[in-house]
Image 1 (cartoon, rainbow, N blue to C red):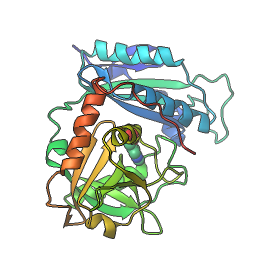
Image 2 (tube, protein in one colour):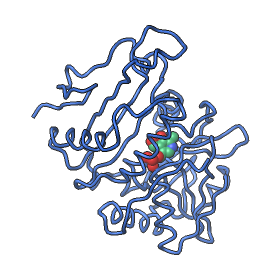
Image 3 (cartoon, rainbow, N blue to C red):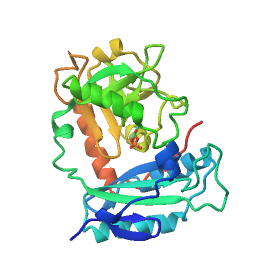
Length: 295
Ligand code: PLP
């Protein structure tokens, strides 16, 4: 079965799936995206991801190019046409194609909507089983990291530097020395007194939808979340650490800057949260969470 992508109203084979050379996403990174996991046929945190997509668009003064129900249908149709039950779904919306000019194009310019699906083996994800190693690197991004824009070059640069240094990912650090988040995930540590610490919501980080689901899981499992910024030095002393995101789900972090975290193995609390998140996605823990910017 040939792979197909949805591009501006059409399902196209991959070899023909392209956007215009003057698409503003291509020229200005003038667009937003979402990634949603489809795990055993369940769209994980679909509600929250669509909430955040609408908010990212509105912050950039863009509309949804199709309504939410239509988008839900298009995602499922892409999965069906690609015969996928375990997949990542990538949605990208830009301000459309127009003659290159910094100012916004005429309001009637059609926006671009692209949906790509890719197979993703959530059960065989070695990162989740074995945990990952991270390196802290300077956060050189713009000042509105709460918007999920396609301007991802800083994240690509830190990820590449981390991989070249022989680890799995980067945790970015702001100019005051505090960790912001991972290159494509939220960063968490667990302190000796078993508190989950993660950076508070602000313009400095993307408020993860998975992070929001963890808030629900924590409250249902008597786990306390302390929202505050933390520095690498504190992270080295943590008993456990992990990252959260739509595809990596809850991935243990077993080493930061060469310091083993806890006993250097995925921790019990992290694994418990992972198990609870999987049950939540399977629909065994009630309604999926809504997402709000919190700003
Ligand atoms: N922070 C950044 C910078 C991200 O790119 C992502 C996901 O791509 C996240 C956090 C986690 O967000 P979510 O849990 O909604 O996937």
